[in-house]
Length: 421
Ligand SMILES: [Zn+2]
Ligand SMILES: [Zn+2]
Image 1 (cartoon, helix red, strand yellow):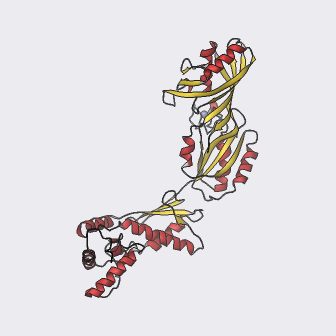
Image 2 (spheres, protein in one colour):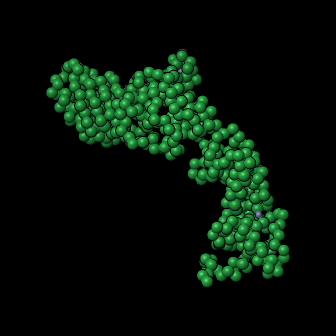
Image 3 (cartoon, rainbow, N blue to C red):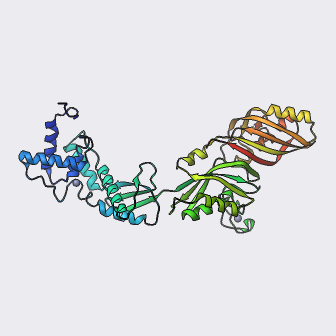
């Protein structure tokens, strides 16, 4: 017969330490079994505790009856049902498919855990917290199923997360946001991506902003968010864009990826086609959304860190007449590595450093001796206005430098964001 997997201790030694613990005071099956949680696959801690108690009885230790109270958990395990019922009341009216319980132990429990470690050391023990979490989770599932509902435990991104404080007896709930992926097209100039507080009054309201507190009457975020907030019955939200175009640039083509985050949503299953239709109707001619779908929480980071190539179209004004041949030659020389210092216009809010970015394609033509239209394919994060103007030597090479004539962008469109989201 194969010997049981008990490390260095023999079966007798494991039983001896179990009997010592049994003799120390009234202990419930769960707390008894938990000291040997790593022995016996497929068993629960109450089953382990029960088995030990039965063997103890057969050795003459008295009837195998579980005591009504337990000095280890001090009744915390038997109060799981009550905590679970209170937890369910806290999320009444909220849609969720996944949940998680956590506990803060009381000082008494902390002291008992320490005492057990010293006085009854066991290489097979589990922490008390784990049994309480488990008991709470199971009690919560029972309370749900009594109402004909189900939900499952999710350790990474639960929709609702409860924290039970065994010391103060309170329960806190955290309702995780709902996330949705999409892409937006901005069909007009003059709309920022996100709400932009007035520079004068910082949002309080003043004559400069006509008491709106805003630099611009609306934003892509505001035009998109309200339909989501209403459908999800959320309490607030954000639009996280994969980069952002300038206020005066349009965003065309397949649009720019974004993730909408809705805080404390009461609904998570929503009709995205209806939301898209509503946004596209209410923001018609200004902003359009496409490709809406539910998103995992990690997509926010992915979208924000996205380094996708972009294709731009720029209208350019030249300070002096330029010949077609010279213009084409300068555009050709723009392809390659660009060393770009943080532009003067954003240096107040971005770290001042020199980045190396690449231009992959540059084509276009003069529409008059002092005006041109070009298309540029380049790395994400390259500032195209400065690529053209040179930004007083901050961007090199630049069209201004290559032409020997001052050039500046008068209109800019993002034609495509080349991502694989
Ligand atoms: Zn107990
Ligand atoms: Zn103001």
